[in-house]
Image 1 (tube, one colour):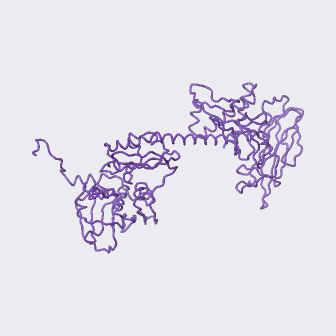
Image 2 (cartoon, helix red, strand yellow; image 1 turned 30 degrees about the vertical axis):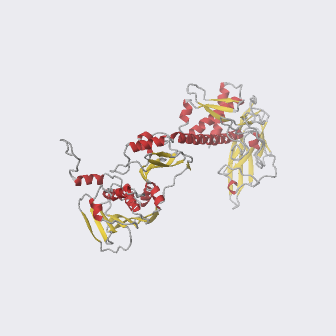
Image 3 (tube, helix red, strand yellow; image 1 turned 60 degrees about the horizontal axis):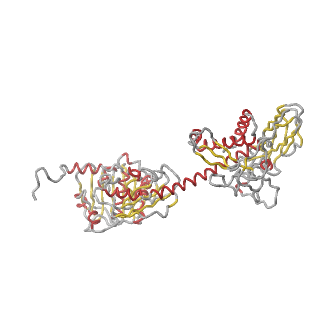
Length: 618
């Protein structure tokens, strides 16, 4: 049939220029090395060895396999863009990745010259030699001993920018790029880095997190999509790669604009999406053609999004719950320490949702139990109470009763044993005493990790450094201060000495401040009844409201306004958020303990409590 005028078929005007464009289209040398390894896998190789080294002053990369070899060197050199693998695929052979016949040219991104050695179909060992940016090639018989099956690919010298590709970098790239191809074929890939004197094995990348089960199958007339997804801790490095026949073509599906959103961009997902029916860009072989097949892939993946978003939401709720528990434990510990350092008759805990007795077999400190704080040494709420969160969660602290010293106490584990003396705390660290009144103080020795040191190995020496009062019972860890008849500011000090097993003496010193006043504030708090502890908290998003927090005694719950600008600012950093929530707890405790106090008194108490909380908030 005669063609109409102005019609015809496209032709290449300059074949060599077209070949140069194809060769230079691959810009990633690691991708080029991966393609060489894929050629070995396509040739049914079971062992592939990559050697990185230096000879005759020049760096080289050599890839050796035990595959089927190259039957016709001439066909490879003269059929660029017409791979024999395409024909094999049409005949039904599977497990072959290449199809463009241009992978060999990617050596231009790695080095200057390529030498390919293999036994051809006639059993003759031949070498093919190519030079970068040259249209010539040569094929000749090899005079070297080559008594094994397979192929050897040798590139030398290596380009200067490629010399930084260490064995570890090649290993990491191949583990991700060829993850499924390695798994399916069972090929063993070894990297011998002679420059670094290391031998590495390429192991298919293992994903972190928990495998998501129960995802619906993705099938279409074009083919089936294999999905392997893991739910992990959020990270900017977490991504879901797009693969074809086991080879990665995109390191993240979010590079497809239609999938650049949650859940794929959330950072909670890792894994692979493998679709055999997508078409690759022939030039770089690291992208896809945005045709009907890619649109079908997007449609199938979008059907998974509701399920994945729900799984991520469940994990986020669990993370928030655990973060709330951790935050409340730390605030409880800080408050317990603060209460122990402050006058116990002036501060008390809030109403808690759950009452509980002492921990079975636990050991409480007298000062802790008296202050209404948790009796466990780490300051945690205990095994039977979690944070009081919204939705009916349990209260953090309940009834705090000092241990009467039962005999069913279990021995502490080795790592719980206290170390050498490091510091000493006086409880309370400050007190207000009426003229002529009395106040008992105690000293607690601690190691560097703040564990309490108990036993008879500590010697206590009390003294009154300032003031006209008197001390009695100064030989042990307790001392009683009797105030004089006139107001004053007194300073009580204690020096603790520990003699170690090696005979070395260790010392620690602390001071307590005593305000002797003629007008003592009435006790507003200090209740130690059952049901007193630290309530949980919940959030209420009210950006138009100026209040920061509210405490409901009936619900045993503190509601925090998550829409307040201060909360938004504090939430940018976990530690800042912890301190902000701790201050809100301090505010509610002051309001509950001093209901009739003036503004000045409430502010003074808030400064006082937050000062001692901050010292122990960690």
